[in-house]
Image 1: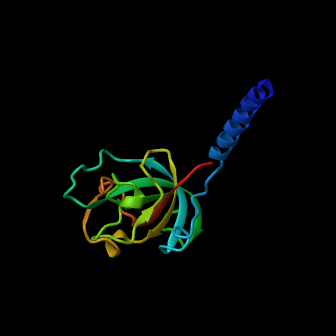
Image 2: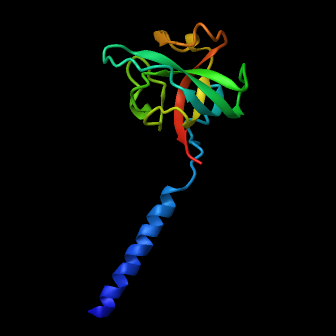
Image 3: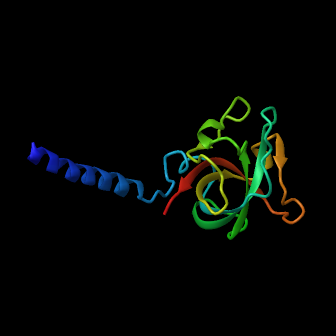
Length: 157
């Protein structure tokens, strides 16, 4: 009986070590969707979310956010340091955002937070890919292209 009792603490320690070591692995955000959708693919840091999202279940819209580009994986950007990206219904997780109106968007991102890093498949300009309400609070300060987020995954380092 004593021998059995001394084995359990070791087994528990090994199991805990295994789970802790598995959760800390970096994730580049790469998957078959983000690497094949859109004409541009980037890894970028979300610099800011300008104000609150619109919280109305009857209003579908794209919300423009500012990103600092960390790496361009494919395609070309109009500006290589900062880009402005419109995300469809940003209050919803990306894996639940696709609907009857816009069925070509998605990803693994659950929530938008300033400072987080995202790997995104993009199209440009947003007006060629989304015909709906666009909340762009950068309108007065930025006149360049706004990108349309097709696929958005979180990145952890």
